[in-house]
Image 1 (cartoon, rainbow, N blue to C red):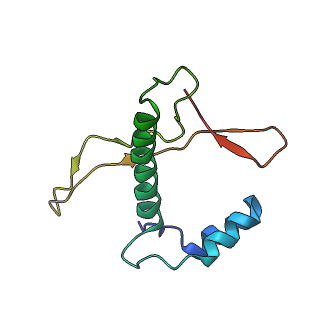
Image 2 (image 1 turned 45 degrees about the vertical axis):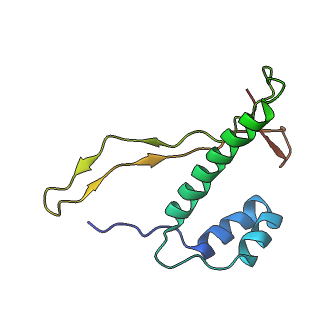
Length: 117
């Protein structure tokens, strides 16, 4: 069995052309990420940072007047981790980390806004 390699920056760019050319332009203009990173690692780290920033922003916005329902940003969920597993051949322990982003997209539009709770 051979593992399929992670997506490359160029492969993501090709897909972005079909989703949003402006986002593709931004993606293409960004420096290449370090060769030791995979695309999935980069996206997980970005989504984790988005969640941390969201918590800080909601906390700051809750002072001095508490937020009411519908005002708190809830677009970036906390990363979740599976139960660690052990590869008995290598001794490597690992877990699956899952991140997600939620938004509201207008029907027939390519415009999305963040989700709120």
